[in-house]
Image (tube, rainbow, N blue to C red; front, side, top):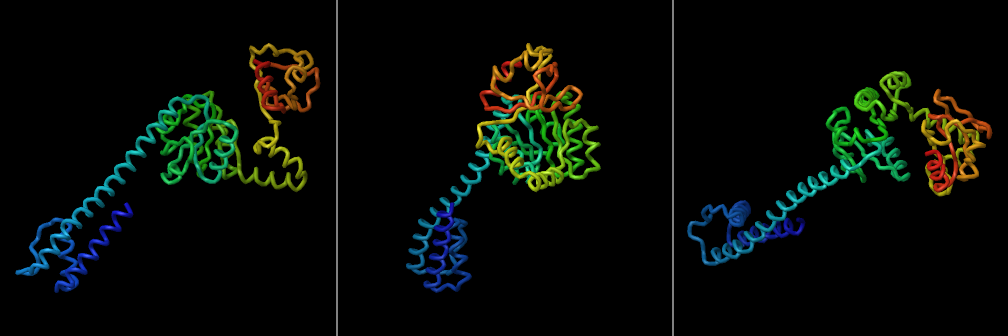
Length: 322
């Protein structure tokens, strides 16, 4: 496209210069050049053009018209190809999203949303970003749906009916509240994490159906305080949860009601001996944590085990729990 525009400009400059030499004033020279290469067909400015004038005009027609047509075709091809590529690319992406199940829908791709998407993708989780701003949406490197997350059809396109988790990270608390309320109505069992800016709105988001409400400012303050009090512990937890440079991972694993380990103690289940993973805490159905559980701690259906181990060890624990 740059080549075509450059050639067209060169033809206009050469044509105008040539007509100046043949006796036209600058404006008439430019006018004669443009009408010639655009094939408009207006009369020649001199009433009785000379032989040189006619020869130069014929040469300009042969070269200038070809360059003009070439430039126009390149411009048209660029526009059409760009739009078609974008359209087909969106269709392919939508087909991929339609095949997903158990993925995470992330609403909002601002600074917080980008950080969330980076950590989730780094953990191997399929993420579909929903963003209303076209420029931000086009900047998403993974799967995305461009549109307002408060609209049902947009969330349907993101695969809300098949998603495992919804994260609302839009800048507005009101928008996060509406998205949460709508999603909870459509998917009562969906796990929803909502971002909040104003502490006064945390209770409202929970009432709307959010399972977890996160205030980035509070999290940031707690992180700074942890670094001030126990920097090595904070760094270790960051590495285990996000960095990936250590082989150990933290995971939460729910004990199903039908699990063969339900109603057994940790000693009877032989979790450590059979998997190598270490159970750090057990969260009961009422939401309370029992940290550093004893071997006599009884596992119940609905309990959530907080365990640490390597990837294969945690997979073994999931298999054992069933």
